[in-house]
Amino acid sequence: MSRTRRSAALALALAVAGCGGGGLKLTPIRGAQTRPSNVAAYFKVQTSGGEPVGGLSAEQFKIYEDDQLVSQYESKQVILNPEVAASHYTMLLVDMSGSVAESGAVDALVEAASAFAERVEKTQRVAVYAFDGCGKLHPIAPFTSPGGAAGAVRSLKGYKPDDPSTDLNGAVVKGIAELDTALSRAEHPTRFGTIVVFTDGSDRAGRVPKDALEKAVDDTKYEVFAIGLGAEMKESELKRVGKSGTAKANDKEAMLKAFDTIAQKIEASTKSYYLLSYCSPARAGKHTLRIEAEAKGDGKTTRTGSFETEFDATGFGQGCDPKTPPHFDVTKGDALAPSPEKKKEEARRSGARPKPADPKPADKPADPKPASSAPAGEEFTP
Image (tube, rainbow, N blue to C red):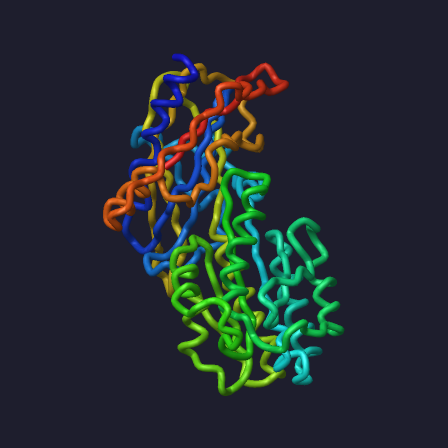
């Protein structure tokens, strides 16, 4: 079968996603198949209520091909480092308006933000930007300088606002755009973003209207968290920004705990992504793959869930190493971006005409072949 025909067949993969009862939801994101017989799937595990489930071992997953259980000894299934499959970026937006910079809480803020960055940097890229009332973001530790965000946060101790007002709405809107740009340059085709906003009050500058902020937050695919400082900080104001979760510190002593609460949420979400790789016993033809997860719940209960997909074993043979990183097609773009069909449906509902797809350059060079004699891996996507 030609590469083109195989790719077309694989477009049907992951047609059944996140099925299976018993309390777990498995959401497939990307998959790959590579000769000699490597099959890999990148997916997220959550409870039926949407809480992330991390810490599962390879032995807690069962692999079925055509409804027949594949022996773990035969498949040599392993959980690979998910960093080879996806880029996870977190942006911290820190309010350094006059009410914060002159409040005497900066030392506590720096300690809390530094601990936050140090913890989150263990699993993903972190950038820190400050904002005040001047209508722009001030880079403290941009994504272009990987690592070291925790140390860079300490420079906030000497921060002097250009404008003492608070451009909260504008900072969030600009932060989303900045994260878009950073992730467009990310190494992997599967990209996830998180924005964490720290503030001690509502928008005062009025540069960006409230409805524009709400639309930007609602429309973004990123998780957005908000941390509020001060007893007068309204929960409704925090939730307007933090659609994914909020934390509140009524005083500077509670600030460390507030930042740590959000760091835990981000860490748990990151650890709920799995890259499962195995050696298929199949040697020809198309097959249905089902991956089941099993996790202990409260007490003695066991939660289960599964998803199904399809792969093509044409040309498969012996010599598989399941620890070989899978090949994901970097031309596929963001795995969480809306599909063309979804975009058309959204445009139809809004009454707008969908934009035509960008024409493919005629002189685009063909994908380079890998150095090894084995062909590059085929990818199956939702």
